[in-house]
Length: 207
Image 1 (cartoon, rainbow, N blue to C red):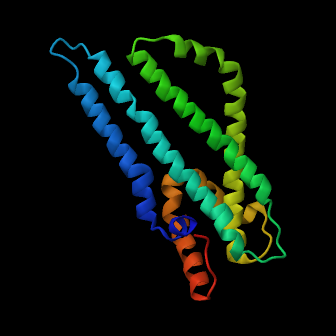
Image 2 (cartoon, one colour):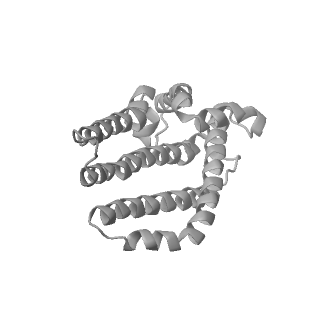
């Protein structure tokens, strides 16, 4: 799987992460508008049923994004000189915390939409009571994601330069990954080059 992410073309990842989700959202919005009757009143049941698609769209996006992060953070470690030590365990911990939180949130959102469409308000009440837990987790997950951006961008630059690097040296990569829809067009070809050169030299990438 790591090998597939590292060798994927920038347009392929962009299409999967943004093209398809945006297309699905357009389809959902069109379907929602077509459920409005001649008096301008929306069909609430139909609209709520369509809203159930949004957690699926987010699940696809998050799965691909975090898979890409993992492929860079872990997959490129074999290409880094052995005398350079990177905090892999810390990366793994900070990787799974926001991933688990986001997946949990998507399940809650999807279940909430189902509960509303079936006439149950119990789930919404449970979510409201969990806010005191969700808010701190949300803030900490944001911190973890910024660390992932830091680690992934540092890994790319370290792999290319074969030495320890400072933040000023990989700040460009950090912001390109942060603004992912734009940055992927510049970052992914470099990952393709790294994977291609190592394969040519007889080094294997994780499968």
